[in-house]
Length: 465
Image (tube, rainbow, N blue to C red; front, side):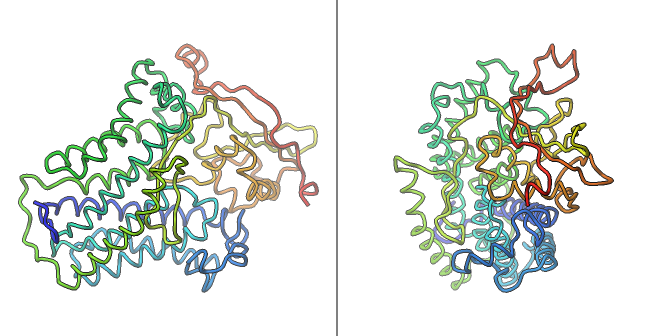
């Protein structure tokens, strides 16, 4: 039973949420460590020192305002990795140690996100920070889970799901006429190994998928606050639909975090809770203050959801708390990809650079990337929608390729010029579509691609200077 202070019947929910958030933090810090030098380092595409020189602390709170070096950034990542590993066992710790550890993880990741610029502009970054902040107040296994924190986690899940459902119904007409998934599996940012199979399902199945999505995002969120066992059933529906999305595409850790939040609605059922103490009075007061703060912060996302001009994935403050969420308010009908090529001589031949996740070689099966996040690959998808998405970083990428910059090349899967830099770099725009079953049998390819035209003309280092 829920009571105003503690909910011992939700001890399994607390265990699942805390451990899954720790795993997600681990993914976030590992992703930052492996990619920051090429993207954000002192010689990266959008260097953090240049950002810090123009953006004050009050606009972007971060430890890196105190000091920045690539070595220090790597140290923050390693501290986050170690802390995330320790957090997997933190339920055995005393309350004060729990609070200190989870607060440290949140501060470290907030410091990275707030200097991450365009590479950290995804909604799941704010979602991890908000979920991670709430876990600070869940408490270890020695005390009963605070009821109000569980409610706040359910409220966060409500905003994720209901916000996404509203933006779809208000956005692209294909969500209302049930045709969205005629296109989405093929045109989504990062297709996975099974995306082609999903795309080839009968159209009636795609319509059922859309209807199930509307039910999960527009009806089920309200059931999260219903009495048991309805709330548990609602959480299970979210878990199943998010699992379906994980199979059909790569969305970094968005699906993992949504499943994590769904666990907060599930009671332990017939499993008897272990012995637990009640909430210490000072901690109960702290939870009440937290709830009051989030009640105030909720005004902005509620107003956004109810307003006629709803926006997706917006943080209303620099701490990324009380955010609004949403995804795919519009669906692209045709997939375009920017293919980057280099040449060692003015007469060619032109050789293609390979990316780790995004489509390139038509014969390569789309890889399973999630819950890991390939930031450059995601931005390349946006770049194909509009060149404006690359204004901050694309010139730096071209220059880095012309110099065979080691840190940037580590972000790629294949460098066709391992021995010496190319003389020229260009980019072409291609139309991609999944091959039919007959084409797959005949050619062995997963994609059929057709050149549309120039995206970037051939450039040398002298041209860029």
